[in-house]
Image (cartoon, rainbow, N blue to C red; front, side, top):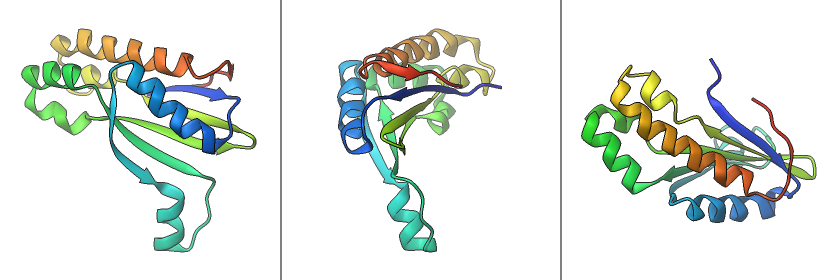
Length: 135
């Protein structure tokens, strides 16, 4: 099962992270959490990984609508967005919100998940000119 929305952008990691934040904001998403995976792996395990951050993005209106359908949906919120270095470019990946309807098998969540997916895809599409789309 495909569970991601992914694009590679012509931005170095240091520029991609604020660009992703701005693109998400344009689509009504705020970033509630930020996990610096590289720093955590270095500190906790002494392991080195590429620059890698997980942003916990939330669109309050969509989250509220989903919670009104199923209170347990909070387990699948917020939408995680990964930004990681890929050479002199950056890979941006978001969890496909379609899972929000598929996992609990709640058809009432489908329109909310589809709207969230459209908004996240629009955010990814706005990040300069994508050079590749994977998934």
